[in-house]
Image 1 (tube, rainbow, N blue to C red):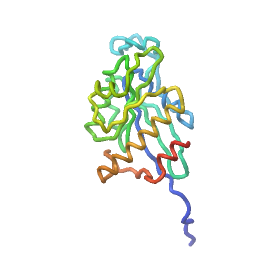
Image 2: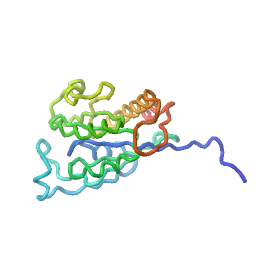
Image 3: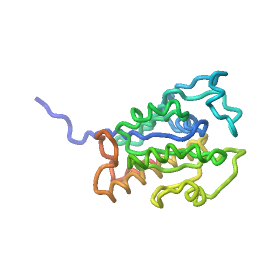
Image 4: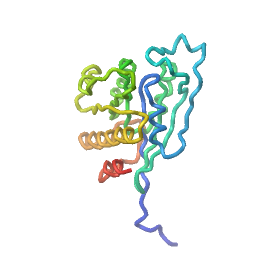
Length: 216
């Protein structure tokens, strides 16, 4: 009985989360970077939700994610990223544990017009020791702040990367993921064990993973 060729590469799936407050751009970022048609679970905002969905600063928003967003990026014959966007409103937070199952890291999107909205995401990942980066989505009408100032405002650990981004632009979204993958590898090396998460996951290929992502 013949055996499989020894040079066949094993495709390593890596699950990442995209989190943040309501209307921060999670769906937009997943759609900008995904190589496949993204899966969206958006519904129109209704009169019934007006009392619970705070639209201050994002008055033009007409839809909301009620379950998750999903996208995929194949980096190489060895590495593929699966992106899961979390719902932002508090009434949907009960789904976060399911979405986070097996994830190796997360992007927390921040909006400087509503910076406090990303605190729940930051707290969630800090409590679970899940590596994350904070990406400040630069909306056209949002005040501009230096990443260092946002770090102080969110009381982040110095190891947590903070960077500016435009969730609409593929190159910008890719740089956020490059930063996250690099941070995951750094955290795993520093702890001497796999990144935190309730489920075992295939390891991120350390050699060349960041360079492959940068060149995708």
